[in-house]
Length: 231
Image 1 (cartoon, rainbow, N blue to C red):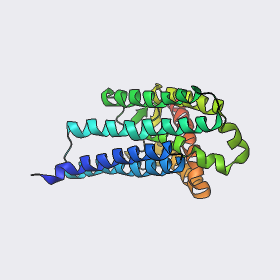
Image 2 (cartoon, one colour):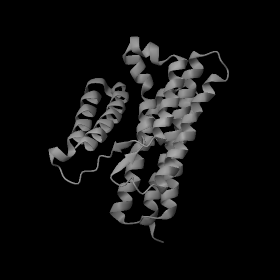
Image 3 (cartoon, rainbow, N blue to C red):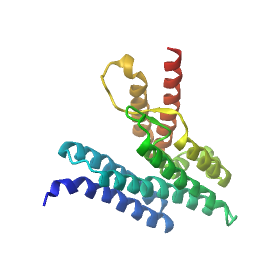
């Protein structure tokens, strides 16, 4: 029995397990733990691909399992986080269910990624892990910044965020992939800016800085696209 070919799938399964555990925590009112488990799952998501490349054990089953795990962890779990946040601040029974659109569009995003041959050196639409990190760290951002946090935590703001981020998941917008063909500054200026802003936000603000990192990533990606067209 060739054990090494099962190692990447085992790591992917841990990604899936983390997402399932996160959902349980969120449904029990522990939203912050949902965020922590998304970070843990993101680590497993990185490791499964990394280990598969090192061991040279790619498989079609692994590819499908990875998408299914990502749907639960980076699609369903974030939508449940938004669901709980809206439910805690709204008396409208059906309003929180609108946030589940994030899970639906995450499924569309992942299906699109699996068949889109253009996404080799850049992403088309916001990646599901980036969207999940933005949503899951909103509670930390809201706690850190009281004034703007009070606005963001309103049900109508969270519903608007759900719809906007869902559309960005499947939007035909090229976004930066942190894959370096060379380390020349001229060729990678927007990648370096993304990393620099991300480092500054995380060092100074901790988890509360993650939403700013993701927003700056999207903005810099759009600016890079515009500069490429004008070049």
